[in-house]
Length: 265
Ligand SMILES: C[S@@+](CC[C@H](N)C(=O)[O-])C[C@H]1O[C@@H](n2cnc3c(N)ncnc32)[C@H](O)[C@@H]1O
Image 1 (spheres, protein in one colour):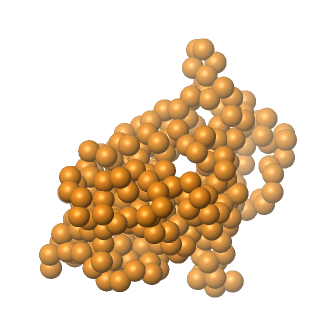
Image 2 (tube, helix red, strand yellow):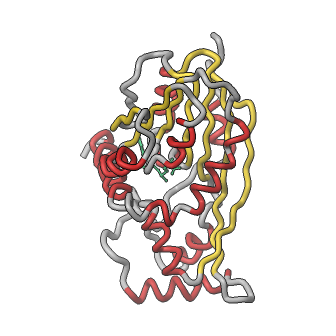
């Protein structure tokens, strides 16, 4: 398969994996809720804006944006996520099924792009950033969160002791993200990085939450299908090294929040 066909295949899998999680998603989305709300202080305080929620998922934040802004568009790769959003969210929102690497909107038609925990799926990221900057008006903003390197390090390190397979997606570093978003016609105005540690009763609870979020598609995973039971138990043994004294299993998510402006060039 050519690199392009592999990417298309991976995108289809990402959409399917999020789609099958659309109904359970809102109950598993502790991290999404936290990170999306975390972006609120950066939102411009004026009503007359056209806003794009890029990777809108079930539309939880698209709905909040629709209470503040004149026109709101929710764009997602997954048909199922969009179906769920259409049925349950504000009637004035426009829903678009599309890939962020090829946004079917006119040049300079959007004032603000909001994107919560989606950018970690973009490959290649440069193409998606180019598209975001194309549809943004000069002076327009991108307000986003994503996960960076260090995320799920407990899980990664526990699996590393068992095999060489890829069990957790590769996340970009903080410096790489800054580099990507500082371009000829865009600049990172502000960024923050913080570790969010969520607690789980056991590793199955963590795996269920990742699955419930649809975040279980791994493009480079060699060993398709379920890992063998033995491997799983070995991994959970290693994970116990990270357990807190009260027996709780922690999982770290390194959250990058960025405020980017499209320059008037
Ligand atoms: C973790 S969910 C976040 C959803 C939402 N932003 C929220 O905060 O609840 C990621 C979403 O990004 C979508 N997605 C992943 N890759 C995408 C792409 N290339 N283009 C558009 N949407 C994409 C998935 O279908 C999924 O709905």
